[in-house]
Image 1: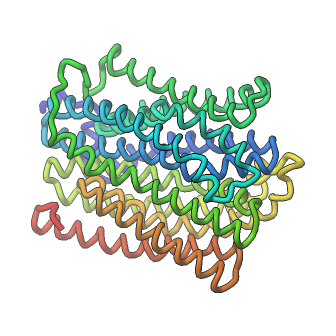
Image 2: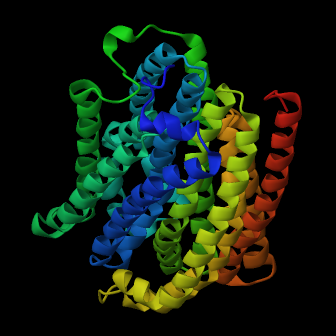
Length: 459
């Protein structure tokens, strides 16, 4: 690969690791914040329909996370595999790999859409949706029918991230977010479509992203990776490279969905459906606060992948350590701001007569969850490092350990055994995150040391 062949993004991910983390993180953080903001906008507008509508949409959150996880996971698989090919100076393989990503995403999206629509009703009954079921169905039937429109853009973002082009990702997400915020109230209230309107607005806004990225790939043609159709030839090794990270990474948010479903059921047992509304709506705010940490961690995937392909193992260690330090500083700032301004944030979700009684509980929840960010700042970069080196199953196991095992156990013990009610659920999430993050940090540090010593990705 000559210097002329390289784009600025490729030069960044193969350059100074600390500079790469900063330059890659900033657009990703902005992008992810925008996505979270328009998810919050959905909740804010839906809350005007009352607490039942808000809880109904909240019950769909675990299933919605499957779509988010699917897109993010396939995007992570794209980033890890394609950035490695770039580091190996195999541009032809990167181009062909990008086409594999697109085709795999389309096929999996159709399958997942059919499955979600089939299991929707029984899952809602198991979760105890009860009187909020009609709202949940109105929202989910629309959203899951258009699964491909939601998943494909996230996979395409992964292609751009693989070549270090995070600025275009930011542009596409910005346009999508602005459109969603504008049309949400129009679909929900002006067109009188209720919660279904929020789903239609989401699909329309993310669907536009596909057109924008297709324009860059096929009309402007100025990306480093060029997924032109005539360059496609099926390669099972490329499929394996993408899916060995993509499928486990997709399953990571499925684990989060399982956690959310379990906690929703636990909250209805120890409290009420109002507690579910507090948790699911408050978690959107918490998730917004985690976006800077996730952005920094996501940047690490392409940096690690490219340096792995180029066999620059010391750069992997430097990037990992720096990303944790940066994430911790950012997490501390977010925690302090959220603690101080929690009452002002909660106003967005409790302005209607039907939801105003949730305000004080939401403030308590948000303030309790500020500790979550500090532990996540250590754990998230460590898990994403394993995605970057192609060890998707290791990253998945760490997520299962954090969510399905530790958080559920801790939440159950504090809420039921120690009779702390809904507050026990909140503190159980934090305790599970703390234990898992410390284990993951030690694990990743030792792995990188072995990688430097032996030059092998085994172990």
